[in-house]
Image (tube, rainbow, N blue to C red; front, side, top):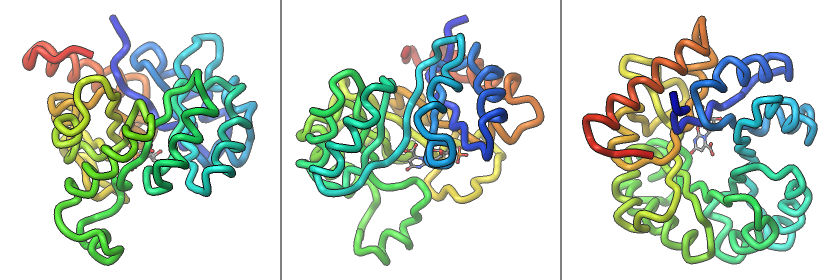
Length: 237
Ligand SMILES: O=C(O)c1cc(=O)[nH]c(=O)n1[C@@H]1O[C@H](COP(=O)(O)O)[C@@H](O)[C@H]1O
């Protein structure tokens, strides 16, 4: 069975747990994601630990956001780890995004538009008025113009972003919750089936998988649901 286009967020307090989750889900998913918690605790070695023998794709989610010179240096510092994907915040602006792209020729730079944890009320307070989709579209166009090959947005906006940037940009959606699952600190969410049908290329899913009693079986179940969606909609990844 081909692995599903899912990046499992390994947001674990210790390396043993993260490596165990990675080995349980790896037959079913293409990618595992290392975020700030693991990277700040264990440093660069964590990448090799979770990649393990399987050679699964590793997504390094550091969400860099600083002046272009600082981001270029940070990106050069992690380039040798050869992650498949590295995140930067689109809000850092075009020169910052371009600096990351130029520093990491072998990694897809993914620009995070508006965090999926932000509600419309939060965004209003931050001065981002109107439908989140409008700001997400603007940030997407800016990031792609600066050379980003991938974008991170909520599944609620993925169809709008796809129409903005066309078929060649990789669209990554966190904020994914199977029907009935608690949204926790996520605000702009949708089901895996909906995210995929609306055009997401890679679904980031953490706690619904890693917090379940059997992460391997849960990942396999979501992968099977995506295969059914693919058969029903004719959308393949
Ligand atoms: O860049 C990300 O991956 C990201 C962007 C975003 O807007 N929202 C978001 O939740 N994420 C990450 O996606 C993962 C979601 O995890 P769960 O909420 O447990 O499924 C976490 O590791 C977040 O850091």
